[in-house]
Image (cartoon, rainbow, N blue to C red):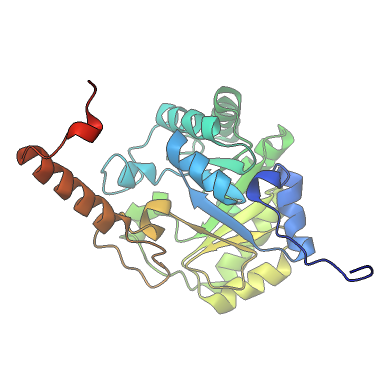
Length: 278
């Protein structure tokens, strides 16, 4: 009917513009929440990208969920670049951020610039992430001066597991956390991850910053959220922190499928005529 407004059709993820650092930052001003997931290979990166996630983090969590280590500390720079390359082959539009692993940026700003430069140069990713605020301000400043986009990470910092005495400890020092966030922004970070921080503190930080805050266990007041994909898909076993929501139970689905396959092979049911060439 003439003059009748059409229903607005949602845009498909494939039609969305490529996410860049400026667009990522602008999302905060526009009031648009940002989604982020970890990925470590071509297959999952392509799936998440096609599903519309705004950003993919090639996290050093791969040390735990891919390599089987108890912490992220053993992960090397070469391993991060290797996984980042695989992720980039699967991504068409999401912003890809790569973790700087332990002891690849803490020694000096010069070390950080050289290693972050390798990540961007050899993988094609858009940005790097490092853990720290006040104590890494000079490093963030050096990276920014070299035109390397950097995302900061404060609160519970996995690379500080030895100092903290364990993983999963909620950080409650509001003054220190705010100082870290402000220092990271002032030094040039384009965004900041807030991990395991009470939501009231996250709300204060988010309201004080002009750059997006990305929460993990930091409440809904953040400008966006990030989860480890293996966790949210229900692939990891025995990990049930308060902040984690399971959006699927793929571990059960996969286990049942493999069990059925094994039984059919043993029983001579697979392959059958339908799955055999004449």
